[in-house]
Image (cartoon, rainbow, N blue to C red):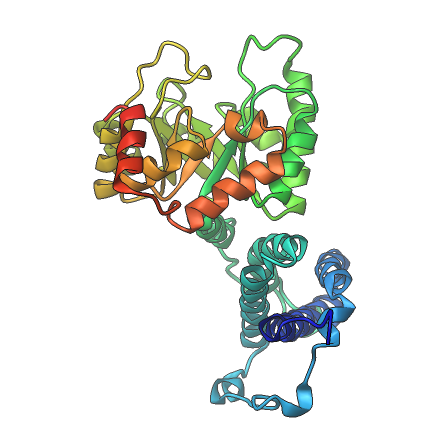
Length: 387
């Protein structure tokens, strides 16, 4: 019949419908635990908000594709379900169920329903931290708090590092009109790691303005499940409860920064040579920037390191690294061929006419390992970037 969806589209709609149901059901389990066992209204609100966000995306065409009666897997269980003896095991299993369902939605909705895919990714990242809070929170009625509480920040730090490892695109800000609008668009495009960079000497930018901008960007990042870091300023990072800081070679030593920030926040470091990368690893950094690959106006006067250092980092770095420095979508094939799997950008997104589309395009290339191209094409790109 004219206008009927193709069979594979119907299958995708059924798949998305099933996983929306799984995710919403799992969130309801978590929500009721927050309400009746923890008596934590703040956690109830956060869990309910995630469930309602998915409900708003559960369009009729997904529900109409449902074929429960003919689904051979309907009602199937697994022996592992019988092993859930404690509330913690139930919470962990349902959080994992939601995260897995969201990942499936994210993958299959990307082409036909990008807004659903973006929301699924954002909720999945938000759930990482929420799960930790649920597992650490003592039951009000049944269980007193443990005599020895978990080390503050230990689990959130693990969650942050897990999220960092999942990030392939790192957005570093620059002063532009409507910075909040640009960053929000980039987040809508899939960015899940943002650094607020507002250097001294920027016209019209004092510490009060920096604080205000950082608070706005932090809230946007939290809404989208993204990590939020501050460049250089440990005091500002602490003031806005950022997820961490990024330090240059001339900034405070990492050991001092860790003492001030505590164990649960991320610390990144700019590096321009292999010995600096090795020192950053020894110092306990969570990630490094590798660059500048190209000459860039954000680092005037600094010579680009080219692809040779990227290759060294790919071969030897024990922590995540982000290639950075003047990179655009056109440079990604050569950077990926050199072994990078993560990049940091400024102007490629901040100054784009459509920041969301620019972010999506970069992410698509990164997730695909770079667009397929001829050897001649890659060789041309490598000529553009110093070897």
